[in-house]
Length: 416
Image (tube, rainbow, N blue to C red):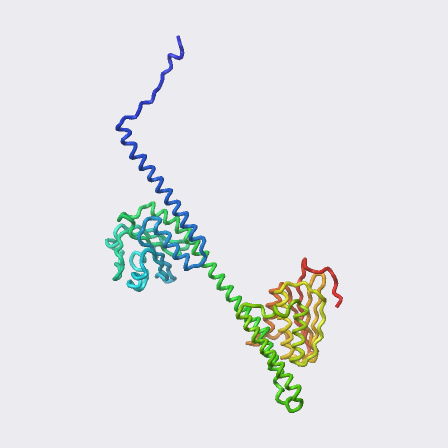
């Protein structure tokens, strides 16, 4: 018996005309649904990219409401930011003209459905706003709205805002798929808002730090120069009767110093470095400073420094300003007759010392209100990664700054 003859041959039946007629609409519906899902995912991706590329908080908030509206075909969208009391602190809209917003007047404060969203912290879909018992109606000039979708915006589990969408295209109610899509977008929106706020706080901190730096530089530079001028002019009237030529020289020098100070202040306003013109290197800057100090105070200054100390411009400026502050304290408080300024570039550390022979002071006492000299010097030392030691006695005061040199040390012992 032929074994092959025992095998049954199965032939698939061709679909009938009725089956083809039924399958075609189902396939078309499936294809349309797939196309719509793909469109929504692409729109979500584009929207999240748009908000992630912006760091300005105001721009981020506006981009969020402008981007979420077309995701679900809503005519209007808004983002409400609640305050600590449960009312709406900020309200950003999309789809409503500026003219209509002005006609409406004050933004909503968190009543009706918006208030429910704030209190209950969960998504909400409403088919007919007017028929919902929780609604409180609209103010005059407000555009008519029927359908509603609300979704919280969270960061790390905390609600920082709520997205509101109304009037879906075609008069259709918002669906569960719409809700899920907006929830996905809201997660990205929350991160974008959080990042923008952090960026804004960092910018504000940078502004405050820049203000402190400018105030410090003005105090250590321009204000000290003006104080030196005042010291020079204190006895000029008496000197006019004793030595008119010397008095005239002092006045001329004071005028020159004031002009230089005015230029420094102008440079600050223009964002320029006031010492960039003269402080080519540390020794040149200290030489200019000590020469000016001697002319203004008649106190002898002895300057000694290793040549070619390797420093970047900011380090050079900070050290000159620190020296200026220390010498200004000598002129105002020490009653000294001599100051020694010494720079030693050792193998592992840079050492700057300013030592006077004045009457000294009690270093354990706190700084007097309105006087920032010691605070500024310590701040500059810390900014340079160094340390500042101040020792004082009846025989004088020594200010010693040391900064680790690291890889930029010149590998030699100081010869000074």
